[in-house]
Length: 392
Ligand code: SF4
Image 1 (cartoon, rainbow, N blue to C red):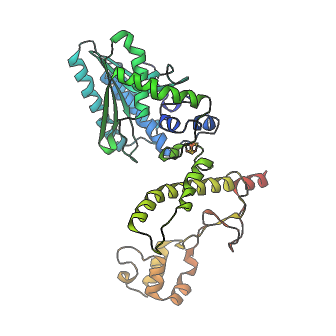
Image 2: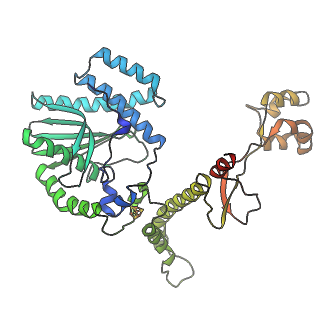
Image 3: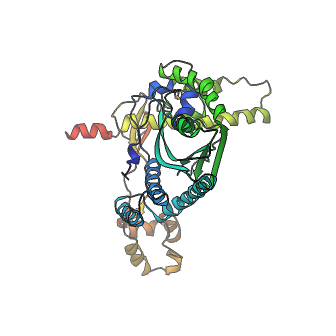
């Protein structure tokens, strides 16, 4: 069986994984389309887990023999920085769940069909829409799509999950003619959160959802039309920092109409708390964007400058500090379990003695660049981008 490059799984403009967003905010898809992708460490780790699970499952369903599995796993261990025993344990947990489903399918019908890494085309409802199903199981009029989610940040439910439903639709579309599918299950397995979530729908209900909910929104999204709607789905939008609709939605907070009394009621505080979480996320996105513009792209953000951030003093050589002090102090008083930190040491032996004996053994590392208001006393730093330009 040909090996699959999981990191390069194709992504459609109207992708299944982005469906929750482009269905809620239809103009977002076309605006995001040409912006660069960023790959996080978590995404790379997820890709690794998918690759590993595919090796295990290929063996389980008889596509590769044991020695090929061992050879591929050994090569994988050597070449993959994200590989760990912990990952093996979680992937095995996922594989066990899938194998159980496969066995159930085989018990229902001898000619159960099992497919791995299946390209699923749902372009009948979403222009050029396709995605990849990790596992597709078909038996006795029932189809199930299983999706491994290796992340452990947020528990994801399969119920009313647009991404999974689009996978289900793609699989239904592809296999209904051959297997007369009556029901479709869509399952998420998150082994690191012990989360196994399934939604099962009559095939008719799924297709009705596609016609009435998905298609009209997909058509709007494809033509870049519709209303901007901000919400939780902005979190993974490439425009999240610069989007005006999101800014306006968040700034409505400032126009909150308070009642007359001087103090806020608990009712009002309850309402503000709901909004505060969103505001915090938005503020972080804006801060990161402004910092990246200044640091990576050498752009000036008016009113702001890059400076060296604060850093903590540390010992240049702990062993030398101990040998210097051991002459005059009991070990217990300067290193009860481990060596005292700098502030605690100054307190223990007095600032004056500290300066006399240890000043040569204390260093202050350079602080990380930080974006601060222009009025800050610290001198402006050159950004990485302008430093590279200077160097050239
Ligand atoms: S940030 Fe939110 S509101 Fe703005 S385009 Fe993206 S999804 Fe839509």
